[in-house]
Length: 582
Image (cartoon, rainbow, N blue to C red; front, side, top):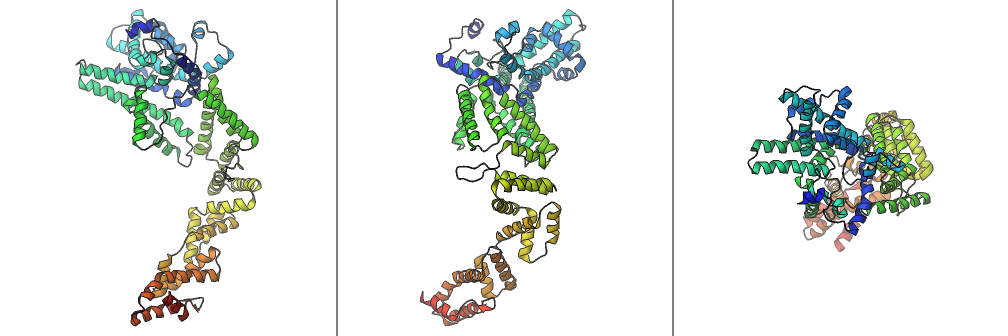
């Protein structure tokens, strides 16, 4: 009954709220997909799903389509299989605000429509890549199963019949006969809820149809298992392709590209093979429930396309005001990138294009050339070095310091010095020197030098190594001092015990402790006080408890009185009498 209604355009009326939601969402959704390299690179992966409708040997032969013959074969596909012609007109997906019916019929476009539609070129070519080869695979099946000769009407009609069956079963097409039931609803709210579910829904239908046939006895278990396997392989290919762009976009540049790619692939594939994520609306409900059970406070599906355009425009205005007032954490390029979200409301995917252009640049800067100067150029354009937060603290200082240290670490002294000089000019010499020392103190070589200083061992080899990487003596000395301050050589109670018992090596332990205190800026009086405090804390109560036992108390007294610092007794008998009174 619903099919008859759909064919006649009679599946209910849109509510006023639905019309408003759909009107706001259509162009916005198109902007999220248009110019999106991550989406475009996934399009050809639907080819694998066709394995559930045509033998693998013909799919492999389909991939052998010569590039020189691809366009000729595509023209034949459009001639004998009208569904291919419909796809070629630009019917990429439903409800994306792309080519209107008027444009499809007349070819007329406004300049804005032309600009929008141009951003879908890569996506359409991705689909076309797969469909051309599906047509070629259909031809190869005709050749392998019939005696029909290529070039005859019968040959192409037979190929079209196979091709149409493969498309109907496994590929996404925007027609009444090919959309899932949920996506045929005319209600705007339902359209928003089923956004970007065409591919997942098609995967679900392929598996569900195979399961239904298995339960009815139409196919054997091995055919159903094969369908599940094909679905898993298809999702793996989608994740493998998508993760390439995800790795390029990733902000975690400290990881190598391969490591980022593997992590993102595994995460994306884990999400893709959750069967409930292939079902519109249901998937979101399940994910929300799982998020709640796992202790996450909030789950967001991102499907707020009715209000998101307004939110993006308002946020862009705020970003512009912040930049004009000097309150923005990002620079001019960063502000333009953030504000580009506002263009989504007009259906222009400027944000996608800038993001992926940045991803390509970052991949070159960090993963191919790994050039510190190029990376600094990028950071300086995107971020404001002098940006502060509400607590009046510089928010980007660590980013630029890390860039400087990275430059030094690869021997690029000129870039390292340039970054430090720029930071000193904008943020002040003393502040940057202090931050540099604190940051550099975490370096492995600096930490090794600090440990050697604590142990009284020469570290000239490490100093020479740092010199060769462009670090000055003042940088090295400041960082070593900072790192040394963190290397407390012994716990207070252990120090007290070694001095009390005069354990082997106690003098060296005391010397290390004194050097540590000096590095912290403490004078002789403060050091003496800290040693005395450690011994008092450990042995005062023991002495008080032993007062009724002369032999025990005298033994403690003698060991306490023999502890010295700088050649002088640390305690006097008067000190011990004070202990006894308290």
